[in-house]
Length: 500
Image 1 (tube, helix red, strand yellow):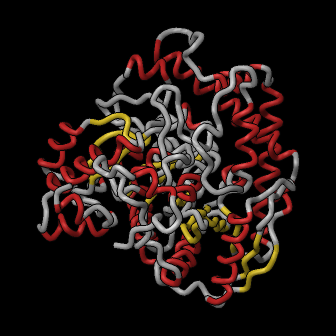
Image 2 (cartoon, rainbow, N blue to C red):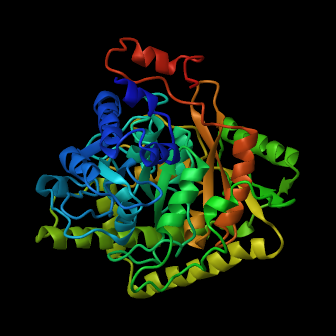
């Protein structure tokens, strides 16, 4: 690896942009360093599945907008994020076979470009983003750089693997049930799910959907600066979060005062939670106490409502049915056998049995759920602290498709992600922070949830945690092709971290 590729590998996007701003490196040189890392590292991970390096070089060599990330290379998730002139497959084999080119940018992608990013390709995603792993039939499994036998999570698993391994410093990600926070936890990254209505999903997706979009990154300042750059409504949006009183980047270092924080360290529905995940939350509670906050057991009882999963599933499956309808329209034909993975076909089939009244009732129940959950914050709590996941990163194949039992991956997923989906339904902002590693060297994130619209408070408290227990020095072992003992090094205790 060249010296520039190595020297810039672990810099965050803010520092990379500063290099370009000072003239220490050109945007093209920074891009070429990222391309060199992708080509060297990705064979072990399979994170970057579509590449347009020549077009990116032309962009980097030309005039770039004077945004906060001018000249910084990045990647888009292969899910709904249209980039004019480039293919998008949503992890689907039929779309991979046809490789249709997008006619326009989505509004968020246009804002990425206006921020100065140089977009070089797409990261792997499970088909239609439906599972908390990244193993689509179309593109194959993405592997976790901390241990390649394990999953990086999903659905933004390709993005997280690319950032955690040092290919790029920041990457686009989206979250409909935890898909930013899950891979952030599994890969030792920062993952913020913004407030519903904070960032437009236009022009193709409904902002009242469960999903939101932003990024996975290695630093809070990158995430805050990007949110400042891309927030705000688009044409036709009807769900619009109130704008912040000041830039989110300025919240880092602001004293939030003494906060009342609830701790949920057990499964809300009574299932098991891995001891390392519970320990991560309890250790974070102790750290928050040492910083002057009051932490006690407490959480919105609505998240333990056994009916929540049924309501969420009705909306999730209906969204899947809509997605398949859109893909069929895009292809100009009906979808046939082999076009869709069994788990997603089963959800779409179930959606056909949901009547309009059933769907309206599920939406009404979700409104009731949202109000009940948010009432907990209105009653005087400031933040909720949980593990991000119910287990450390699982092994590749845990959520494999089973044609004989097509919903088996979704059933297994419920045990893995008991803490994230509720806040997609409630619309609240939540962040996963890399504060814990297992004795085997696997990352375990903790989640903080704030009241609707209070990303500012999340940034203030997260910055306190980042200062008290930094994570920027922790990186996976190099995944280079000349490392004959790569797998052995990755999986042995004591060889999991590289301090730089």
